[in-house]
Image 1: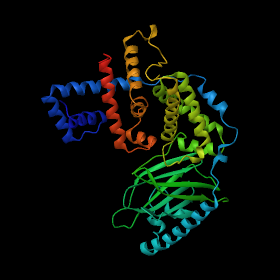
Image 2 (image 1 turned 180 degrees about the vertical axis):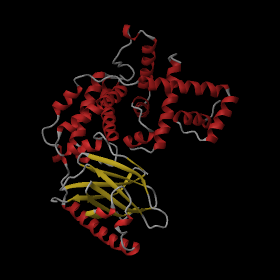
Image 3 (image 1 turned 90 degrees about the vertical axis):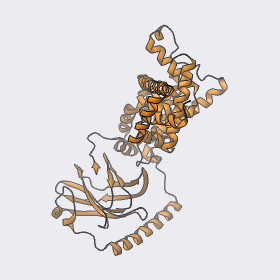
Image 4 (image 1 turned 60 degrees about the vertical axis):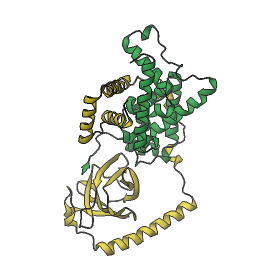
Length: 227
Length: 184
C-alpha cells in the first residue's frame, strides 16, 4: 500500500517542489513499487486533465452589464474618512517616527554625501524635494525624493535584517523593487530608483515596504508644486 | 536585485486612477479580468447564469470597496477572493433548493458532448462538483486560473502549506471519483 510519505513525494513532483534528494527517493520508489507508479501516472493524468479544462469566453454582455451597474458615486468617495482616533494614532506614529529618526541618525552618523548615491542619475545634479523617515520596526531608514534634469527619482536608505521588497506607486505608475537589504557592516543600503517620464508636481508617491509579502512599513513622499 | 518599469499601465496604476474617479480605468480592469473571474465562478458553480451573476457582483463589490484595497497585495488576488466568496455565497443559497451540486450541469451532456474530449470534460466537471467547495476552490484557482501557490494563499488568506495540503486532498478525491465513474 502506498503510504503518506510516498503520496507526498508524488504530489511534490506535481507541484514542482522536489529537491534533488527527494527526486532520487521518488525515482527509487517508482522503480520498486508498481502501485506507486500507477498512482503517480493517475495523478499526473488528472493534473493534466484539470489543466486542460481551460477557460471559456464569458458572455459578451458581461462587461457592459457590469459597467452599466457601476454606482454613480465616484470611487474616491469610498475612502474611509479618518476618525479622531485615527488622527490620534497618526500623531502618535509621527512622534515615534521623529524619535526613531533622531535615534537612527545618532546611531548611524551623518547621511551619506550625494556622491555616494548609486543609480543612473548624476549625483551632482540631484535636488532633494522631500524626505521621510521609514519605519521603526523591521525596516528603518529614510526615503528621499530627488529631481534632476531627466526627471524624478526615489532614494532609499534602509536597514533590515531580511530582504525587503519596496512597492512604489503613484498616479499612472507603479513598480516593485525586490530583495533590497542591508549590506553587512555598512549600516544600511542605498538605492536610487529613477522614475522615468515622471515630472508631476503636487502629487504623492506611496512607498510600501514588504517582508515576505507582508507590509511592514509605509511612507509617502510628496512632490511639491512649483518649479 | 530585480526591478522593472511597467510599459503598460499595471493593475496598481489602474486602481489608483479608479480611486480618483476615472471609470475608464475600471473598465480596463474589467476587460483584463472578466474572463478568469467568470471562469472561477463557472467552475465553482457549474451554472453559466449563476456564474454571470457572481462575476457581475464581484466587479461591483470590487468597485465599491476599492478604497479598502491594499496596493501592497496583488489586485487580482483580492479580486479572486471576492469572486470565491461570492461563489460560496451562491452555493450556500442554492442548498435549500436541493442537493444540486453535481447535478446542475450548465452544459448538459448531449449531442454536443458526444466527442471523447467533451465526455472527459464532463467527467472532470462532475468530479469537481462532488468535492467540497473548499477543496474545489484551491483546485479551480490552481488548475483553471493557473495561479501560483503563493497567489492562492494570498487570495484565500491561508498559509501556502494549507493550500498545498488542500490541493493534495482534492486531487486524491477527484481521482477516486473519476475511478468510480469509470473515467480513469
